[in-house]
Length: 294
Image (cartoon, rainbow, N blue to C red; front, side):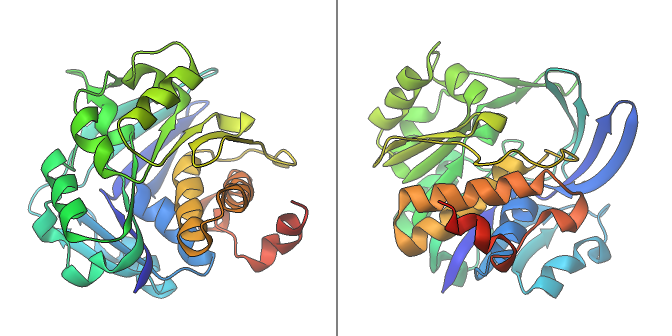
């Protein structure tokens, strides 16, 4: 049995900060999958890539012991340009891979304590979620970002009202939003109102991330979890939300302790912004002292 299976597109990211470009693999299979694996979880990922991403670029999954089902298509790998400006991030979709179908998921990947559905460019349909809900007894979580994003004619990402919320949210146990995503998707001006609207659709728990201000968790418990100490430095924030969610699901699926799971995930996500590349991902041993402080 897996502890966590992550389903979504692996991406090729171009990250721009102060005019300087860096290149990275992205997407929840990368960020959430590796974070959970480094914390000791048995992890599987399901994704699709194009012919433009070679196998050597993904060799770290195998080297870390992550089981993969990465189907290669004749098209292109989903690719984003992320430009960080003073007060916001500009996200531009450059190209998109084929959708992920439920039939792409090996049956043994459904035998997992938790499954994270994390689309980034509309690659997972409501039908996929419906089939997953009927075929798996796993705790099912989703990151809302790929469901509430739309892209204009130039590929610029915009958040919109979630028209399929009534269809998808009742099938989920846990759903995560950023603050901006939640307010826009639920057409609200207040986080508490948005959280209640989301819960009214049926999920047991909603997580709303607030950047460096922490996370709000509503549902089974009502919590505001803030980092105990700020990061020593901020080198890379891309994927921190995925890292939080991957570790939260790993911990929660094993312990059912919301507060502890949120605290541990917050520590790991905070540590992740202090480094770049694979150095962003920490092991349980390296944060044991931080965990004991809670």
